[in-house]
Image (cartoon, rainbow over all chains, first blue to last red; front, side, top):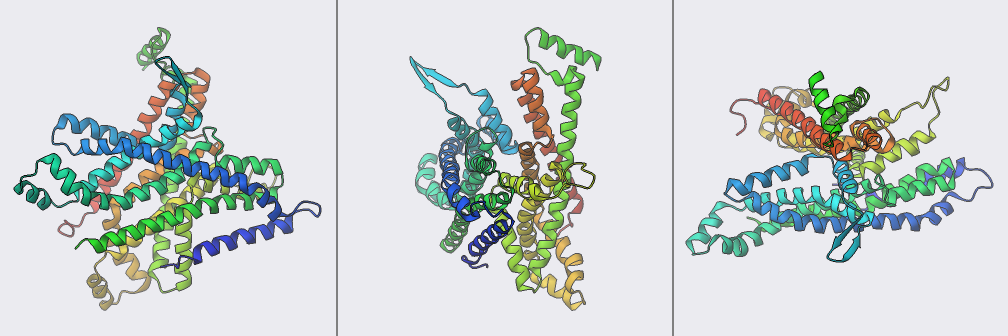
Length: 257
Length: 245
């Protein structure tokens, strides 16, 4: 297993190498490459923080939407299960960008509740658009988690006099939540990477700000360092989250017989 | 066919939904061209990513520690960065620094080319993990038996590990291919005329966003369904009777 310090060190070394190469390629009177990067770095970091913030909000909204859908998927009644299954398959199998376009174009600019007019800024629409496929994936995670609990737990609870709701609440869900945690954290990493889609629909996130910075500087040798910086910023967030998933999985493996 | 077009034209004219791609020949051609580009993009990326995955898993199964480090670094980097940012890096940063082709006939690598390269590298990273897990799931007793018969190195990989490992990891591979088909929509951001791009051109002209969205969603569902069906047929035809539950 690659040591946890080697990969970030290699990535940072790669960035510095590209800066050195760019410095060699830049003109004598141009400001230094590192100086240019440092000048734009706060703005780009702010953009990446917007990405992370939107992904956290979309994860929260998606979980709120997905858990009831997941519970509906497990009902024995076909009347409730079939529509839930259709909705889940629909949102899981459509491209996230198409869903994002759908929500961005077809939600109104403002909604009126009672006499109150609430404006919907673009980032709110983006959160809703990203929360839809997240909800479908959360439903699948919930279904997988609960169905992975052995049937013997259900039988034992039934023999002790628990009804279905009590069994779910006191026996199944506490165990299932631990199993759902690694794929849920993994989904958050996937969502953070997908959050860069919002630059396509016009929100000034990390990628859009990097493009703006590159065009403002108008120096072609800065292209590679700037984009590498953006890639490394995303990597700096998503790689620890991926490692956290692994740690959670391993701890879970030790907890189960 | 004429009757169908006439029906949709009448439906649009009388205030109903405007499915211009049925009755308008220009829109229909644009849409079909976008669909074909998406299919080309998907097939090229799938093939290249499988090749990359097999090559990476081959290096990981081998003895070279440096090779292991390189492949693991590649996998971790491409799995933990956004595919859109990777695509932008290749198209704007790397493509911006490349020289033009001789005679000034445009860039050396077009947007379509960068999209294929970027998506193949992205999906290839996931495929390396998938193939590695499939190959590691081949029972060690089988590998030892093969080695006792004289298989080693590339022969062992090609005749024993890959056939058995591929059958084990086929569901995960299908899942990754479905994700790749969905990821091809990102090519919109660099101006590749794929399905989403064609639809956006049509709806910005004819102003039928709702209808084109429905058409888009149904098209992608059909594409994914066809891919899953083909993979399931292949899985059934490859299944070794009695080998796996």
